[in-house]
Length: 418
Ligand code: BJ8
Image 1 (cartoon, protein in one colour):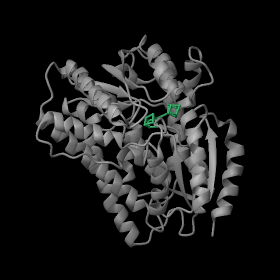
Image 2 (cartoon, protein in one colour):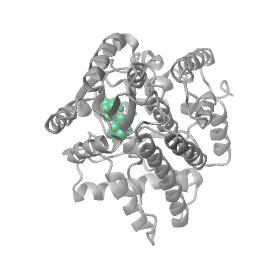
Image 3 (cartoon, protein in one colour):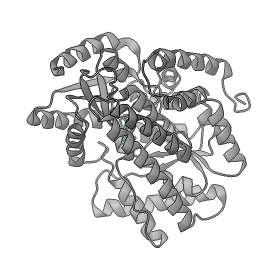
Image 4 (tube, helix red, strand yellow):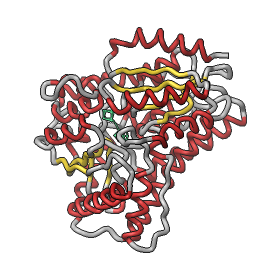
């Protein structure tokens, strides 16, 4: 299958083995995990096998398979067209050298990692797609799309940088253009009933993730931060109805664990909230460090985290125009640092801190991500004002800074521990 997808199979095999080893060390070594995590472990085992076969089957049926890099791309429209949306953000150092043969070195590692997967032909998801849909959120991404387009058809959605009425009008136009492009694969228009049904599916998925996040806020928490992060990552490539059912099964188990006072890793563990840039699969670096030091992460204010699922969409509009307006409004609530001003995010971080029962916040940014690195100043000021213990980490995917980060994380945990 991989040769038929024109992959560099020798290199891909090595990467798969490495991923398996890292997963075993990072995930399977945890003790007292919920039984329902078996499904998500299997999703990782099948990440390059079973799920790819499902994508190929969808393509054979003429259903669109679309790659995305941002939570501003409206998945509901892809689902309504019978298609599949897969998140392509890269969280691996392994593909960065492939990107650096072409792109500048001093840009965001997430962009380099994703681009490198395509340039090196080492990601089957990139090889299966009909096309990718980029967006104009940050400079690194929007200029990379021009180069990526030489390798895979790349369309770009213009995302405004402010939230005035004129920006909302423009964004609605972009949503309509996106719908037209998705429909071009199937050759038929999405109906209002199809869009309503897709909205229900996505709302249910987001409700399940909200439920999971509420349950992990219990004191003591019944699940590790690493496990929740994994589920938030898998949310971007699993089939949504199946995924929702599995998350709810896990939540049922967590309710029982809470009733039985199961504590992960123990009832005195320091509780940390992470805020900032998304941690794309397999970026588990910070969670592994924090939880390896005996603490637990109880919230991710991130696009691979609450920004993806905190907002639901109104399902009840009567006509397509109103439905698309509701969809636009739902997506405009996402508070990415690419927007200015972005006061909602400061409020949201403080709200999630209170709800999660955390004892401190680590703001996590990737190197060269200007918008999060600068917005960090306002988050820090807000934390200082509220008396919230706070630490800022800027990192990349290489293991080089692990020792230094470990020392800083341990000092922070000592500061917030009882
Ligand atoms: S809505 S956070 S998914 S843009 S970390 S590539 S911003 S330089 S990922 Fe993002 Fe959409 Fe915003 Fe969310 Fe650029 Fe920053 Fe890199 Fe980033």
